[in-house]
Image (cartoon, rainbow over all chains, first blue to last red; front, top):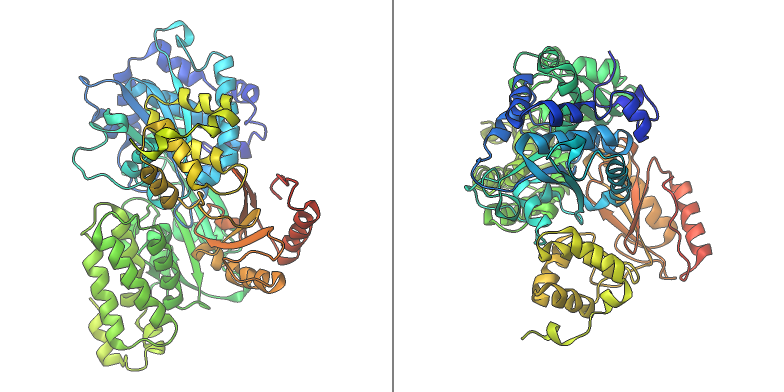
Length: 430
Length: 180
């Protein structure tokens, strides 16, 4: 099957605007602007079954339909903050297939009646901003952005905005704050961005990968896209595979591809003769899936889509699949993840800010071999006090690895906490 | 009236066209603060109190508001460091591919700890969180003023070669090399 998103792998020079145009590029934008009403575009995207690829999996067309028709202007903001440990797909798209991405942004703008689209890039993508700004200028020169597109009354500008290093800016309301020139701290909701978004106006926020699907959906039809993937999880997804794996990288595959296919067929299995011990399918925000002889086949045959990953106790998220082999202990893994979340907590709400501070203290103590069974219980307790009590999902995410590691890998903690006998320690199990 | 109102605008004088382009870009003035901070950091690699006051006065903000943004985002700095900041990712996915050992070996070879600068003032070694290059670890980014360059699939030897090249250029020159 040919690529839908990573088309540079089929067409090497697709980052050249003429090459992209020669391969059907911008025909979809022309089609929507010259022959479709905005509502028809929304309906087509709804019918395609496309869901948000940034992690939440919310139906894209439905999200667009929340924008009120009596408050203007509308904005489209593309979330290109890609910061989840284990995720590196949006960068590959933007660096190599930039015009399909930008055409997707433009189609989304037309769909919701926005005259301006913003691309929010993480600060580390500085070079990418320079590159995309050049691409945007080329589109203006070719009459694909600017005033009166294709002779219509529709005018559109796309701008890039560079962040400056903050994981939290991937959270959509923090991202809006950042464009507005503030610290990237999440807003209290409601109101939701669909009503009060960028500069107080109705705003739709979509991920890079989500938007890059749009030109192909318009070109080939919602029915074609819906036919890919599974019933509830339509289409293709880019799986970012990293960690202890022979062939790390991005794999564009239909949703519903099994873990076995991804890890062993495409990823080439685990290097150096080691065994697969754990999978974090949604990056550092994942609950950790335990792999042992009794669970191996069940997990390997699980379809990776928005529904089925839950059956093995985790989530698909942005499909940033981190592979961990049997040389690693889970106290080390959560030491890494809690370090990350402690650093990235924005400080606005107390459970996340203080909870991560204390989780880090406890995890460091345990990992250094100075922990006790009381520390394990305290760690679980603190995680429970954070989860579900924060303004945004970062707080919840910070507890996923901690809670699942304690529950699913008790032997790792018993081994380094001297008084955590099997009997006492079992109180940790849910 | 804040202190900021009374000082001239060196940033606008120094980069008139770039500052104007930034102001023209956004419908609301305050949105210019992040690109202006990058501009203020271009030359010295960090933003001075005067630089913050300058930006505050251009945007009708308090200096404290600008300082809070500098403090919040990790790519802005309010203290002088090495000419180059070598920022190694040692988050979980990179660590699974040996980033911790890579970083430790760099420390030994450069004779500094994480967070420290080489005695010639050229390279500050830092550990940072995920840079979206997990499949190409060990990796780091090199920050020089407002420039950032990724170095991926790096070995200790190749990194030390880069450091040698940076030392050869010296404190006055600019590297601005392509990602390797």
